[in-house]
Image 1: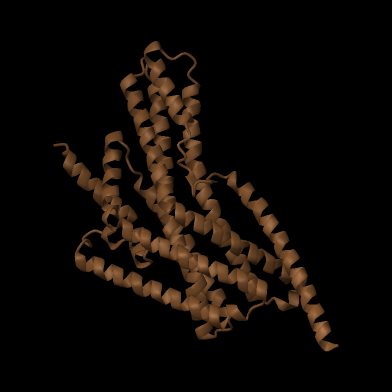
Image 2 (image 1 turned 180 degrees about the vertical axis):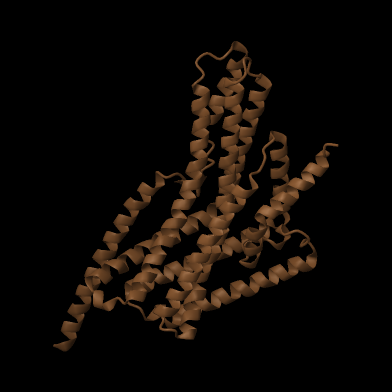
Length: 387
């Protein structure tokens, strides 16, 4: 006897939890997902424990950031001190936004998962379990590699001074691990949207080219499904928009600071030990990876939509009964509903890399000019004081 709709729904729900189990478990520990996202963890006691854990975690992070600034960042030269202080402040705000987002979604996460399952069942989309698990495992593996390298290099660069390493890890490494895990969820969501968009395009292609008389009702159904995917993409980017903006600002400042330190290290190689070079290269790779991944997965969704549009435009003479449906489909795909815009101004596609490079070049030149001017003023003051 074929399974009922309810049985299929339960099987799909369990399958989705098996796919996401590793990611959700790590995310709950990192305070980037509510504990209610885990099965059998929806009681008030679980939520209370989750809230206490988040408060303790954020309290440790704030204390580590404060003492790191007081004991070490405050002792650096003016330019490094200002940039490190701004970076640390952005981390404090960013992590707070992630925790608030986690709290906001504790009553919504299960509903969203259920809607995804119902939508997949309506469109007949079969989830590729192994492909989804493989993608999640790869992303978690990359975060794990960064975590291990960051811990080892940070302890090494601090010459195994325990309290200094703890403060440095707590104020700089830890927030980047948390934001990385938060954005793994974002990558998964957009990657799944891209896969579903590709599946929709394949279904449309079969309908248009393998049937003698394409069905208007089926094409209309695919059009509505495409609109649903566009709306979901827009909601995902709106949900993460503040986190994305803060990440971009933090990565932009840190990237330019590290680039500036690399330049100083090239000028004075004797002043830069190997551990410092490795640390700078690791942070450069991490920040570039985050920014590129956000833009890449948004571009992937855009590319799938473009393929769908090209497919429809490739039909030279649709029947009179299909013309109106085709026109609506084309108009829908061409209309910009700002699903890939965050903060009102940032368009998340690979073209944004050019904007970042131009801004980065301008800031790097400013830092060089500031450093030269500051050094000249310092020498002038020292010369006057010795007279």
